[in-house]
Amino acid sequence: MARTIAYGCSTRMDEVDNAMKKLVPVCFLVVLGAISAHAQTAKALDPAMTELMKVKWISNHDPGFGGGNEFYKLSKQFVKSHTAADFRRMVNHFNPIVRAMGLLCLAQTEKDASLQILMSHSRDEAEVYLHEGCLMSKITVGDFAKRLLIEPDFLDP
Image (cartoon, rainbow, N blue to C red; front, side, top):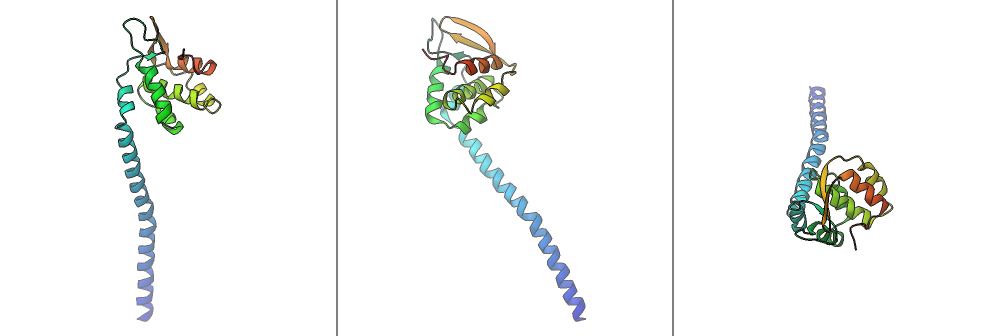
């Protein structure tokens, strides 16, 4: 009888141990998901990102006649207030203007480290408008990345 009880306890302890081994990774994933959701919410409430989502075209320093240079002004704000990790996330955003901003900011803050990212986005076929003073043209995000490879500060005066 003692053997049966000892064997029964041992089997039950093994079951509990196995259940705990399965529960720990699940708890870890739940906590990680909560942290990630909190971080995304914090970034989603970022005023600069909210403003960037309203921008309709890439612009240089010169607003031209009837144009605006919100993209250019926001780029200066992003470089001062955001990190390279933020820019790396931006280059994968669904909005092509946000991707372009991420590429621009990476090119200006991490010139050497951004080469691979710029090259990997050189085939991005999403079209955006490029407003340079009085001239406006269509450009792909890939072509924008190629211009940044040549001259990261081409939007500056």
